[in-house]
Length: 177
Image (cartoon, rainbow, N blue to C red):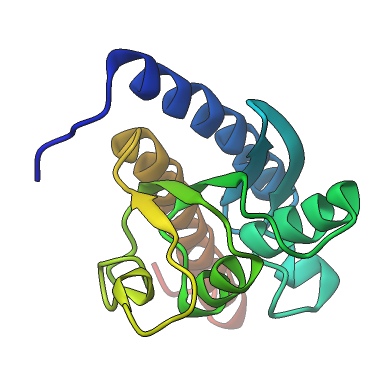
């Protein structure tokens, strides 16, 4: 697929996606999967969000949902046809549905999600012509950087789990190597 964006559009997308990456770092610092999002209106960030499902005990507390809720409060409306969403990971089906209901104009995402991505990886809800609103998508912006954040997070989590398992075995059987 050929990138038809201008140099200015590429720079703009990267600038806002880096702001979403800052949000992802906040999620990671809180022990959450590092995904962040920002909503842009009139070329300004009006809302930010990062993953909080663990802390909030809310399965819907994805970065996109947090940012959409905050943007709706700023705008005084749940419809956002002039807004764009920048998110570090391809939206899932839940978030894609909320994006479509909010009638966002455009979504830019970083890393693809081959397990739950609903913007082309597993399914593409945004291609459904029968839906009453169409949101355009640009994927793969800063994909390597966004993907590396996730790889590093899950790698560290796996290493910590292995260390905890080893420690538990050592405590239960001190003769085990």
